[in-house]
Length: 226
Image (cartoon, rainbow, N blue to C red; front, top):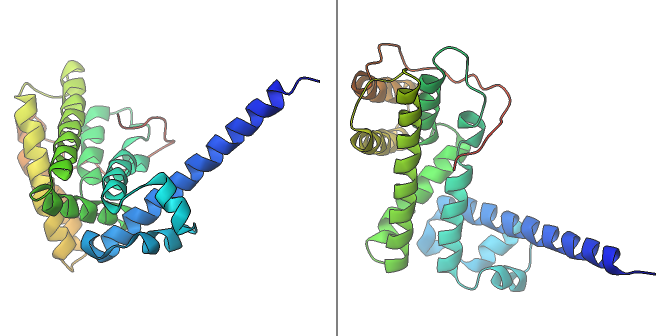
């Protein structure tokens, strides 16, 4: 009897379990770092939160620093995905997508608040640590290109007017960083709505838009941010 198929199945099952464990560890790391700050995080704390042994955690991530940087990349890939990966409305779809970009960059719910806090931790690490600086530059470069891509698509469809796409992407990042910090420190439920309105009042005219900030009403998620 051939053992090739069962062996392949076992390998696939083992790889799937390893990926599930890795994901659980990264989620636990994101939550723990956002909760107590990187400097106070211990590998044991993350292992306990993930429900794995310290030995298994160290098997996947040798150091706390490596875990932090991979957790940041994981956070970036998954933050706000349910909003911006949803199918856009038929009317002004690119305007709607740009609105979801803004939302994905603001701490407007529990998950996005956690991810925004992780970016603040990265800022502090990046000015002191070369590896963190490299990750920060890469992530901001990816974020800038993602925003620019949404704008280019809108321009190609005739929905957005001409502008310097790179400068507009930088503007969106600067505005969401600033207003995101205000939301993080604020206590009023109106902070989010006010931040959206103020950001949009600066961004929309650059694209020739006169519509208000587009509300999110996702349908079925169909895609993922690149």
